[in-house]
Image (cartoon, rainbow, N blue to C red; front, top):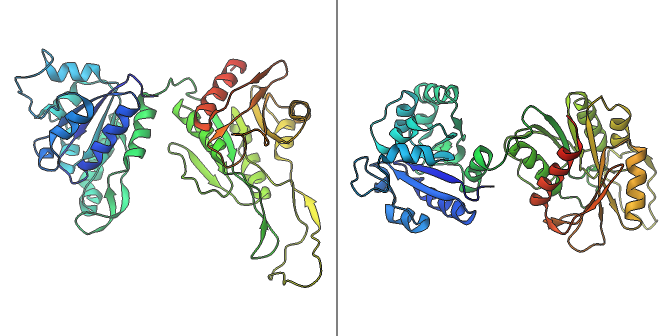
Length: 398
């Protein structure tokens, strides 16, 4: 997390500068120490007092300001920063950074810093798509900068297209990735499943369950934040796709089986958090099944056992983790599943426990391995994801 991290926020002369104030507020609430440097033109869009009020620090706008806290200010700021974010980043500042031009406090400080650097372009679509700007962005990436790709939509100038600065919540995640977590999973390939599946009855109706996908998405984010190469195979959800993750959308249990099994041999860690349908209609009607006065029976057949397949085909050194959702005999049923599916760990939760299960932002689980059971208190699924990974890494000898 970003608690006690020093974030250097560079604000340049673009209309999106107002979003940077919201980002600064988010960072402060997360416990970060935020220092702001504004370019000469940025003060035409937002007053430095805004940032000074939010951060509790003087907002730097002049390289030669005589009222500074440090002896050599740009060097001190460069050394103190855990991460640097330029948001918004104009085409002008991007060009300067790409070619090592250091003619103001912001560009000088960035050139002197070894901290991770993130640039969030914000400009007119034609300016952004101009080959010169694209070459400059590619140059920055070659030098190790991270580019937070702009969003598309209606711009302040009236044009529609790419060039909108990402929302503060997105930029917060970029900073969290840059310096918020130990990168103890670098080099590991992780395959995660999430969400429900849908099994069609006819073109109108389908069978599904109440899974929201929140636990699986939280695990995908946690793994990526810790440096893993993450692939998320997800059934239909209303959640935004996690950043820094390859997302494979599927609908049916069969599609999930194919997506997972075709990738499983390349994965070091597999976490199967999806709630996959156990049965599907034996026949799917091409037309809508019409209502009648008679009762309706639907013949069902078993779907593919994804977790069973993974357990039977687990490669040496691979860690396989599953989930179980029970309403009774939680530990007994979960341990049976652990053994039957050849799992290294199973995460058991009881649907009847308040705060646990589907569609909630919290969960209450018990982590079960061959030799250990660890019951955890209620916590957010985002927090729980990191706790689960701590236990996996403490068990998994890789």
